[in-house]
Length: 438
Ligand SMILES: O=C(O)C1=C[C@@H](OP(=O)(O)O)[C@@H](O)[C@H](O)C1
Ligand SMILES: C=C(OP(=O)(O)O)C(=O)O
Image (cartoon, rainbow, N blue to C red; front, side):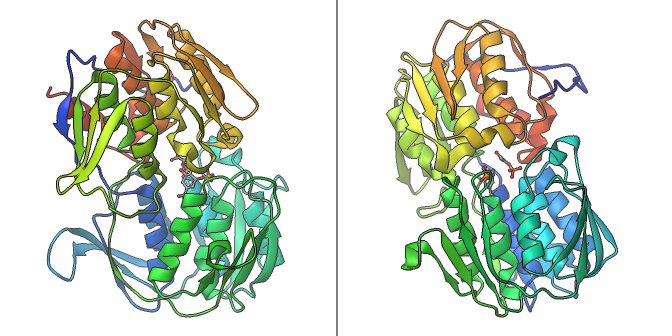
């Protein structure tokens, strides 16, 4: 964890003078957009993505696929409406270089795609990308028939020497450090000669909703997937080889990026409406309805979207976030403002996210006067009166939005490098001040 020297002066997080009352249109889901791009690139016919997220992570995914030969054009959908990407699959080829930035989805989902390409594909990224685990993907691909040159650490940088096809078949991996290992292998598997059988052998598996998202999206483009939930063995997923359909998909709003706005309603005793909240979704952010209700809010899904109301009181929570780890920074920020302590559990793997999120949250909240301690797998948060100061973000978009939540209730919180929100939510400062009516 290194402090990033601010590229610009810290951003003074707006302090809320009263209860917020706003409707916030949240841009598309990162996780859905990047899965949809991969699946559309591997399809046997063109497809459309409507309302895709355009952020650092998704633009890196689109550039990487373009570098391997895929056509991704700006356009309008078949019904003539909406901002759309038209994805035109092509024979994948190298040589190409992929910049993964610090996007877990790009660094993990694309090496299997590269194994299907003809020619060398080099993967590189931000310094932090060298520290994030990739061994599950690298080791599995080698077992499935790929040739990969790396420096032996099970991480970036590396080169996949694609041979134009991959055998596939059975493989065991330990995905306890990232669910994205499983998702990565499943997403490309319809194009492997024998499909894939992925067996997870670790003791824990985080982010199950994201694996369900992978399975649902594969099935939606015609893949046959057997899962533990569809009567298969525990911790085993099977994908049958077959052609994928090109589809017209509208991307749901990013419910994890809705988190700071819902938190604003909770913390200020106000109301925020998020239009287009899906009635049924695999996104982990949907769990906020339950978590933030337990912390003092109230919500209803209406024809306007999700209507979330704060009561004026914010309560602590004892919760296992293993399935929804990416919600931890925002929940920790709310918990620091609550009227009772919180225990957040099941998220040891967050130490390997954009930054060590458990260390970063502990340090930054405590520097504002808080009382947070790290546990083996999470955080204890005892609310204390907080004061202003610089909130460092460690190139982590969710640290920046967590700091902004605290800034609503605490005057003088300044967010270092708020521009890091561009990873998944480039419009964050404007959406935030817009919500506050400034
Ligand atoms: O597959 C995905 O889209 C994601 C899976 C999760 O990763 P981990 O299982 O590594 O936590 C999540 O935290 C990340 O933000 C997005
Ligand atoms: C962990 C996250 O991202 P990534 O896709 O880079 O793993 C996140 O967005 O919280």
